[in-house]
Image 1: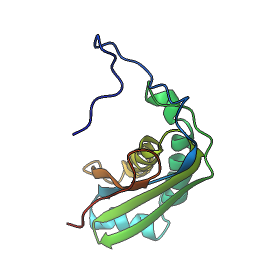
Image 2: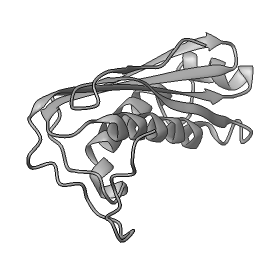
Image 3: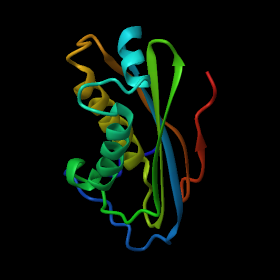
Length: 159
């Protein structure tokens, strides 16, 4: 396990100095799930929600969230992205799977941005469908893959 880089020798929080790190291609891919009643998923898939197309609003929310991650997570660096993409699929009749991919050329990684995009997209799905199903759950938000930088590549092992 690596050291906690967001603390100095006295235990005070700090933003990591990345000024001496080389600029490299960075990518992170994250996923999460929203569990719901089958009828709620039918509303989403058939685009019948009173508030509009749930997944398109969630897509925009996820993209916007990635762009605002440094405003939400205190010690994250502000990054200029080359790509933020959001995808949705339906592994069964009760779940929406959300996947984000974030990439850029920078001195620090984009894992937090990918995870934030998935989280806010999931919250948006909840917000848009809560009138139909308050029992929805957001689960398994996790990093799937990342590459770039000193720590190299990470790929989550299949379950």
